[in-house]
Length: 197
Length: 197
Image (tube, rainbow over all chains, first blue to last red):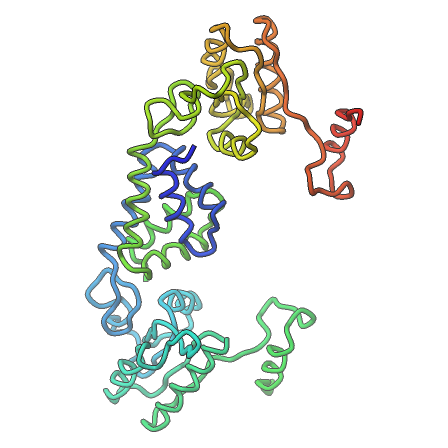
């Protein structure tokens, strides 16, 4: 009962993040059960997205223009650059509607264990952008994990020599969270970062 | 920051079963981040599967041949037909390696609430197959839910008039399960279906 086309489709679907063999099989059978147009719409959407979307040469977020909408928006300040690991972090930050500067996607974080050093990230490109003279502050919004912290510390050190303020997003108790269920490292960071009301 | 191609891809991915907007977005960003060939492999796998795979005209399971491997296997008996709702149920049954007959996929189950009546299922095709004279038993392996039970009961009644034995798969406590966590309806069915050891 092995049908090559279904096996191939299942294998490809199982490469999606968080999708195991069983879920991939469920997706495959779904795509075979829906009207053909609907399945082909997904195939076309993948092909189109890969054809139309590329990285912005300045900040490296996804765009279908020559430069991304954020890099070309004249209403956004050049003085602040928010550094993130991944294009999807740009989307997360934009959802806050609180940031009016530019972005810089590193495309990863330092991870000596996985052989990812400073040369593998877009750190030189960041330093070049900082050399323009317009940049006053770089917000380091890498992930709050070991690699992200190391990356932030590494970049902060480089920026110090250029006299640019490097800031790090705050760590603390998430809104809507619960002290009882907050891990002790986060709680310690929340205590350390306390502010006068 | 709305990029049409990414939005379209996200929408298409969110039509997969059990995939919400957020997971779809994660899939979309993944498909944009991996090497282009890998993303296009998925698109091609969908297109190929839809081109090569169709329903077997006899049992209605998926196949890339004229008739499916099960319907054409001379080693399988014609005397028993296992009736299921969906092609993926055939796969589930085949995994048991306990069944050596043929299948018949109904393509759904009776559901007056959703306007699905006997005419919308492949019941006539089943009766025609039973008229060949080779069929001695029909195993009703529809889902153990209200619709599946109703469908099984409906078909059993039709088969009675043809003097063909209709059987229903057993309901009971699943292997590896736990009495304490078994719902009372299942437990009642397990009690009702008890057998002498």
